[in-house]
Image (cartoon, rainbow, N blue to C red; front, side, top):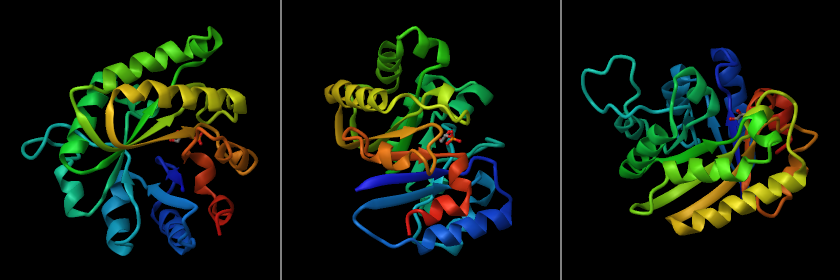
Length: 236
Ligand code: 13P
């Protein structure tokens, strides 16, 4: 089974979101794919109440908890909506809201405490990639985010090179495979009930088959291509 996760970011208005949601919810249930989609935060509860059985992910959560926290998304409210997934540490959140690996680690722990499956995003900049320091950079991200003092439940880790997001560029298939294998290897020192490694960054109809065929890749996290009905219909 491979994870197919759609991150709709802030691309879609309400009627476009509902239209795509209906398409996703019509996709056949199979053992081959598990579909999760992440609408803009403003629409999450509406979508979840219209389609209670669907696998919806929030695009972020906060760490402040219940109380006087204006503008916050309290993780305990996800349970009220029966939402089971959340993206964490997406590079756009990191750059727009100055989120650090340390904060992503704190959010990860909160996800475990609230039985939310996190989709943790990591990835290097173009200059790190060009200077061939991707592995050491990812290693550092992992060791700041994860702790070997914790027993993690299910975690999804998405390798999303920042330079690949929204650019139409991707690493070579062999590089994606090598990095995802490397991540599997270095994650062995932590305790997980289940860990899946995904690739994200300019996934589209032209490259998805090849990426999903890579042995080390457990699925994909897709941004702009997933806002097109032709992409969703690929899985029919
Ligand atoms: P694109 O697929 O648009 O490159 O975005 C990837 C992404 O950021 C998914 O989280």
